[in-house]
Image 1 (spheres, rainbow, N blue to C red):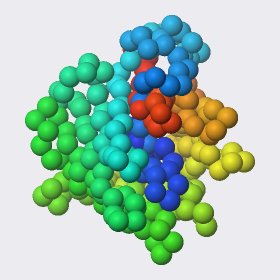
Image 2: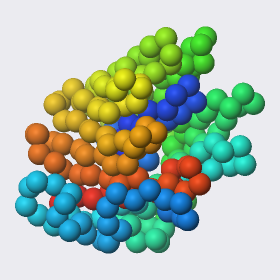
Image 3: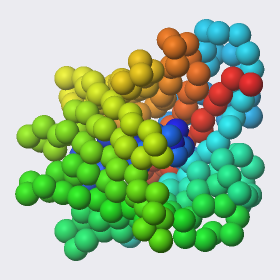
Length: 231
């Protein structure tokens, strides 16, 4: 569910951004990009304070429709630019008002439909729940969000795959998410630019840096997320 959390942990406003924790639950390079680190397959050691080689393990690619909405998100799980069994693509759907209503998930090289996601909103159009299940109606996974009066998420609960997880969002004075604290003590930290756009995340397990990611932008939109791990 960590795969999905890359997309779910990125907080959107009333429209944006829900995507997964242990499914991997979130979520880049063109003429005008913001780069905070190397594009090589391994980091030069600046990634963390613990010994080891930082290796590129996956790349998320983001594509948008004519309305500027996120249309597809693809996890190139092996960072090899080739469709294989570890890759996942989410194809998003919206209503006439621009609210994200759901997604179809395609996993593996065969591009078979493996998951259906549905977003639920309250009377203020705040996304408070996300459900995902297989096309056969099995393997239900549920993310339930607590939101404030501005539709900003304050916490979540995940239930599925015989697992329960909780998390709390911490924000800066501009309401940007700067930290996501999981119920088990692990946490995500986000580095932002002056406009509140994410530049980097650091994921800590047992207070040790376990994974980090660099965000890249093109024409003002998130274009790519490159994820590194010690190997």
